Image 1 (cartoon, rainbow, N blue to C red):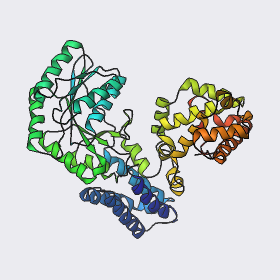
Image 2 (cartoon, rainbow, N blue to C red):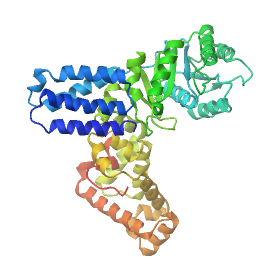
Image 3 (cartoon, rainbow, N blue to C red):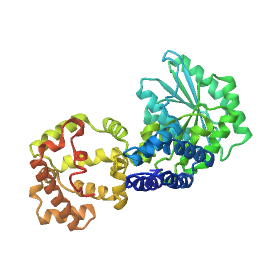
Image 4 (spheres, one colour):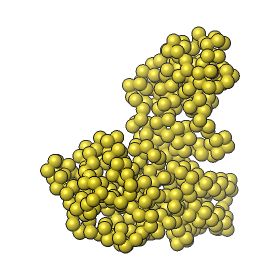
Length: 451
């Protein structure tokens, strides 16, 4: 996650604060000096950091904090509240007209920020909310940009309007709106051209589109990995064409993430969504309060629940819960559960959202590749072996190891751990709960999984 380094540093600062029974003004100032350095290293704007620390310090050295029974926790509470305020306090949706009217969204951004993919992701989100979106290929310069939009549109089940690369973007936009009116589409999403850097031609093109069609929302896509440059880009686009919101991409990468903490303050515009991966489903609504919780190591249980509700098959979860109660859990069920964990972003992704798990994870990095090896082992078993692991004798295990490309000792380890887990399930049937809470995820804190 983008904020991993910042999160670790802040948690260490607050760990020291919690350890003190009483805090002095000097203690608070020393802690906030470390917070300031951590934020600057995360590429948060200096001006933003200066204002943030000043506000926190003013609140944190008040007598009601220093004289409270838990001053360390009070300071953390203040930092959390100010982080939320910095990022916008409230969650902002893309503002759309009523569904009986056409809303026009113009997507803008520099080349390489993931704009075209994000445009398709947004179309998918709006379609899921009952809208009828139309994607429009206005990037007539970048090779394969139109094809990329068409491929992603097909995957989302959203049509793409294209006139090829021999027409001006403004004319394509106008024709697309006419097409939408005739065919009952109520959201038109314009995928405009990006450039390697901001130039006059690009800005003029965007201005021309806005002068000729009624753009309801101008959304800027910026690459979080460019750090402070992302904030500068957002500021320049806002000054030149006016933007209504920002989508931050690549927040799952090894980035310092300062852009998410600076953009609202610098531009006055909200972050609408954050891109957390390459898949078309990897776009999350931006919740300032949940992001602050993640940064401070408090987890993000609400997002985890929402992910589970989207990705976990409820009928399968209930069926699994029944099997566990009867101790009928087999390798087919185990495989299903692993695949659901993968859909939710893998074990590392899940642990990032669980309170306090960041510190534990840091001590022993999760080997996501081990999940692939376990999957290969199970897939090398016959249906009979998966359903009845008791028949796995040495010759069968040897065949499975060869099929999975692993040593037989790894097969033995997986089978042994699976047996132990089954015994544990049999002894503690109530531990797993029911419904969507059933399954492998419920055992995370109780049993060491083989990956």
